[in-house]
View 1: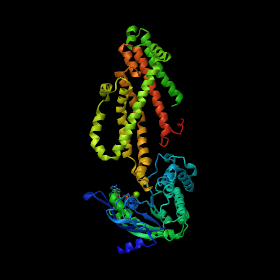
View 2: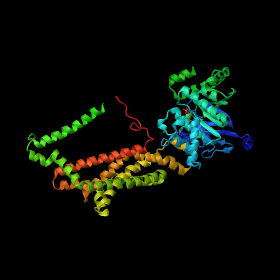
View 3: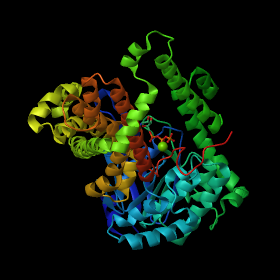
View 4: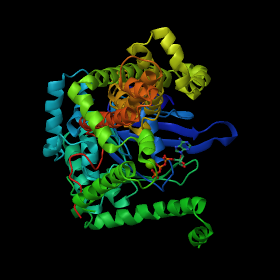
Length: 284
Length: 266
Ligand SMILES: Nc1ncnc2c1ncn2[C@@H]1O[C@H](COP(=O)(O)OP(=O)(O)OP(=O)(O)O)[C@@H](O)[C@H]1O
Ligand SMILES: [Mg+2]
C-alpha cells in the first residue's frame, strides 16, 4: 500500500491504476459480483487492450475508471488521483451509439469544447478540423441518423479527442463494423494515437484487433467475479499497419499464446450461459 | 399504387357519397323528398350556404375567434405542460407527491368543467381557452415528463464524460429530448386545443365556429349545421397541415421517410 502511494507521487505517473477493484450490481443476497479484485496498471502513453468472453465485465471496468460506477471494494486511480465522480481527464468512446441525435455531426463535436467555455465560432472551427482529421469533412451538416455506423464512430472519436483527454477509454468502439472498416478505423486510431501518445484502455472481443493495436493484451476470466487471467506484452514494431501486421510470424505466435488463455474462459462463459450441449462440448 | 389512381379513387368516394345524398334528397326514391330534406338538407343547399358564409364575410370573424382560442390554449397549455413536466421529472419527490392528483385531474372528462369556466371567465374567449388548456396541458405534460425521464443513459453518460454540468445537461440533453417528445404529440395537442375551443363555443358563446353550428341547430337549420361542419373539418385539416410543416422544420434531425427524401416509386 505504501509502495502504491509512493508510486502515485513520483513521475512517470501511471495513467490508470486499478487496485483490488471489485464491482457488484445489486445489493444484499442478490448482489452480482461482476468483477472481483482486479489489479491493472496502464502507464502514460501505453496502449492496453482488454479481451475476455462476453459479459465478463469489460465495460464495467471502463465505467469504474470513468467514474460512472462506484466500486464496492478497492479503488481506481487516474493520473494518481482516486476516481470519485466523473473522471474529466478521460475521454470515453462507448460501446453503444452515444451521439446526441438532435445535433449535427459538427455540433456534436463542437459541444465538447463549448461546455468548457470555448466560444461557439472557435469551437466549430476546431470541430471542423477534427471532422476533417477523421475523414468526414463533407459530413459536418449531417445528423447522426444520416450517417453510417462507421461514420458515427468517427464522429464520436472526434468528439472524444477534441477535448484532448490524457486517458482514452474505448469500449469495443469498432464492434458493429465490418472487417474492412474495422481495419481502417484501427489504422486511423493508431495514426492519431501515434501523434500524441495518450494512455489507452481498449476493450475488444476481437483478439486480432487487440494484438494489432496494443502494447499489452490483458485477458479477463469469465464472470461472475471476473479477474485478470494473464497479461501479454506485444513487442511488435511500430508504427503498425493493421492489415500488414497480421502477416508477421510474431503476430501468429502471440495470437496462439493468447487464444490459448482466452479459449478456456470463453468456453467457461458458454458453460455458464449456454445450454447443456455447449457445456458438454466445453468439457470434452 | 400510383398517386393519380389513388387520388381518383378518393375523389370517386366523395362523388359517390354526395351523389347518393343528392339523389335521395332530389328524387322520390327513399320516400318523401320534403321530409328527407328537413333532416338531411341537400348538397347543393349546403354548398350554397358555405358560399354565402364566405361572400358575405360573416365566417371570417368566427374562424378567427376559433383560431385565436386554439392558439392561446395551445401556447398556454404547452408552456405550462413543459414547465411542470420538467419540474416533476427532475424532482422525483414532487412527482411522487402529486402523482394521484395528476391522475385524478386527468381522469376527469373536461366537458364538465365548461360551465365552471364560463362562470369564472365569462362567455368570451377565455373560458374556451381555459377548457383547451386543461386538455393540452396533460398531453404535453406527460410527454415532456417521459422525454426527460427516458433520455438514453448512454447519451447521458457520454454528455457527462464530455464535462457537462447539470445546467449544460439540461440545455444540451434533457431539453432537446423533452422537446422531441412534445413535438411527437404536437398533432394531438393542437387537436385538443381546437376541441376545447369548439366545445366551449358550442356550450355558450357569441362567436366562433362552435357557436355557428350551435346557432343553426337551435333553429333546426340542418343546412347551416352541415355547412358549419364542413367549414370546421376544412379548418382542422388546414391547421393540421400547418403543424406538419412546422414539425418538419423543427424535427429534421429525426429519421423519417417524409424528410429530405422523395418516396420510392413503384
Ligand atoms: N446495471 C447492471 N445491473 C446488473 N447487472 C449488470 C449491470 N450491468 C452489467 N451487469 C452484469 O455485469 C456483467 C458484466 O457486464 P459488462 O457489461 O461489463 O460485460 P462486458 O464484458 O462488457 O460484455 P460485452 O463484451 O458483451 O460488452 C454481466 O454479467 C452483466 O449481466
Ligand atoms: Mg461491454
